Amino acid sequence: MSTLTHPQPAGGVVLAPRITIADTDIHHAIRSNSDLLPYLSAVNRERLTRFGGTGAAFHWFNNGGVEGHRTDLPESGLNGAAVCDVACLVRDHLDRYGVDYGLLTGLSVYGASVWPDVDYGSALCSAFNDYTLEHWLAKDSRLRFAMAICTQDPAGAVKEIERLGSHPQIVGVLMPTGAPRPFGNRFYDPIYAACEAHGLVPTLHLGTEGLATVGAPTAAGWPSYYVESRLARPGVYQAHLASFIFQGTFEKFPRLRVAFLECGIGWLPSFLWQMDSDWKAVRYQTPWVKKLPSEYVQEHVRFNSQPLVESPSPAVLDQMLEWIYADRTLMFGSDFPHFDFDEPTQTFKNIDEGLRRRIFHHNAAAIFNLRKGT
Amino acid sequence: MAAATNTQMRLVVCPAAELPPGSRRIIEHEGRSIGVFNLGGQLFALKNVCPHKYAPLCEGPLTGLATGDRPGTPALERVGEIVRCPWHGWEFDIRTGRSVFNPHRVRTKSYPAGFECIEPGGGAAGSVETFAVALEDRHVVIYI
Image 1 (cartoon, rainbow over the protein chains, first blue to last red):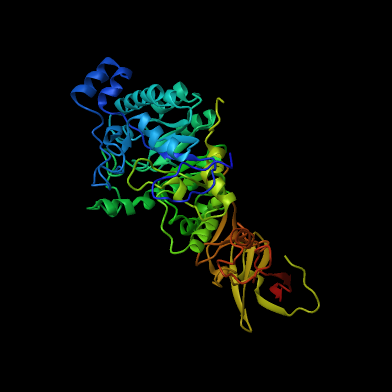
Image 2: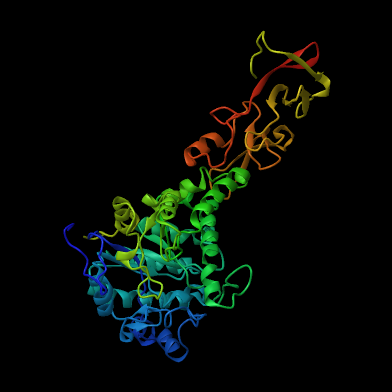
């Protein structure tokens, strides 16, 4: 395989040697609500038809591109900020870049996790999962799926994990990061127990900040513009990360691995240092945390790099990758088809080749059971 | 309690009655500051300097060893035998002078570049210097 090269994009750009690519963030969607109807009960069919989905729309700001998506892709294959046609995904992404494994992360039912009626939320998640099985996973063996769950309905989420968690292409559960309580809270423990039992990865992704039952998207209140909300993301992920560590989630679930998607990495070095420093100062308040927070992170948490920060120089990027233990913790995610996607061949193209292979495949394969069922 | 040797200087801290169990004394001698503790009748002395930022360690709160086998169920053992630095909360075992979380090991392991810039004042294992204490002629004395 090493002699192959990627299909060459327009513009004569020279691409790096062919490596195995696991893309950990691909957004797929229903084309319209009617796609979910076959998988809903009669009462929820009527509800979806007459009332609509959860009402918690992802686009609470302008986003970028057009409705969040790249503008060089055919509109027919897109629904807002996600791809709704598997043929479009295959042609414009999987085949184009030689993606070996593509993790579908959805978008259509993120709002289900913050909707006050959790039964309806869980029903929409189940329907979206069934829709994905039939119209996506069955259509291309390269696809994997972080299945939808209603995070605020742990019992319903566990039921859904037990129903579908053994499917060979389902490797994670998607947890939208805007939430009423951070994810280390024991409220979520049943979900983690089920994930651990099924070898699934709780997969965090932004998208529900400021929606429905969630309060303002930042503790500083409401940003006015999309760019402000974008820049507020690291704080949300930091709150979840500290929560996982200091609530002792990884002490309770020692085989659990979690993925943080679309959070970037620029914030991470100093946050790791700060967690370690704070642990030394107030360790006695959470004595079940037995080791440095950064040690838990190295063992249990994986990050994808998108949107990759534009560092001032390659040397700075190399240093940052060392600081975040990228050889173990970092994964590639494109965020296809979003306007701010990281193009596989142009991302990390100047770093050490061995590290590049780890980021593009090995680290993801170490937590997501990509070869499950094969 | 470290053993005294012939080359050390003997300092009288106070009459034994003035250092009852659970209490401590800070003494100064030629620019050195030392904390002397009575833990249930046993005497211990530590250098009154935290190896982290040189705070007066022995003046911090006396506490116990916080433990927790399971998240959400904290416990406090060996109450009164741990001193917590008044500045940044680093904890030391009064009996041994050893850091509870062993900061030097931690630092060495995590930040080989010396990120925290701590001078190795407490020895490689993350300890605070201890001194021999004795009860002589109904007085507490230390050897430094």
